[in-house]
Length: 146
Image (cartoon, rainbow, N blue to C red):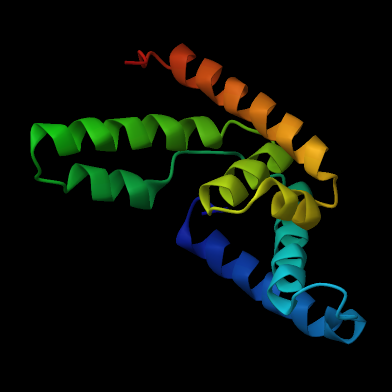
């Protein structure tokens, strides 16, 4: 979800595996292994964004899936809503994207804060601000909230 196309996803995946391999000896066991691994992957993704300075474009794979859908009107409305959200997320900065993705993956505020290296309270504040920013972006795209 962090990259637009398959080639970039593969590059980032390889970079994450490399960083996990290189930093494994520094895992001290102060947190769950999965939390440490997620944090390394997230930091690698953010660093990758900064180095590569990728231009955010619409996700072609997602667009293809939406074009090929033959569903009821309700499904089309839901897909439209997802598309507005997806487009809006890609307009956020890297930290805001990370916050939203962690939130959408069901992480608690405490876990989000731990993964991003901020306090739980700061995670709550940043997440609320990011949600508000998403609403504004989506509204600016022409979507009307119902």
